[in-house]
Length: 253
Image 1 (cartoon, rainbow, N blue to C red):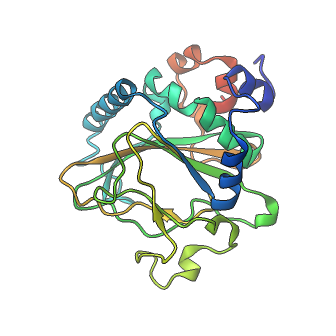
Image 2: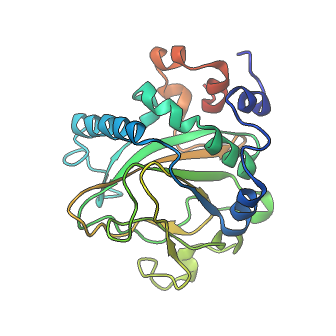
């Protein structure tokens, strides 16, 4: 593989020193999250959502394929291996720059769509990863909003600054299903990109509408850490052939 370092890969994929402004970096450090509104145009959002609907049907994500760990939502795993249309998302320069800010040398860990079911979707407050803060952050998450995220349809809740507390919500909250006094909701239009630190407290909330609310979650891990899914074992020839050396460096395959 011609591209060997994370800096080379990021440069070839369009990440520049000024991709993230100083104000964005400050918010990532202070609050543990940031939302970039309207990154994707409506045509791209519609195309991505249509492909996910095909996959949900093919995998029966609303029926027998329902994830037992998350019965309030229909999920599709390993989305990045199920169509070139998703490459523009997990390789987006703004997303990659944000992961580099948190993790340094990193690689793709997983890519999963989650559609909160009408009347369901509320989760316990949780952090995606945990470890000693002095060891640095080892993973970070992101969400492409494929529908408008509103309070009514179960927008993700997050507790700003909780990634710096050194505590897990299940150890600090009497009831992780309950509202936290400092939580906010990530309300933003479809096409937006939300970045949140793997240590920040967050969860889905109840979708009180009569329609699913879709988000596409992409997780990255620090390169010296295990990842949720081994990307190399999942990559078929079609995927490998279409990816540039820089993209394969991010996927580590």
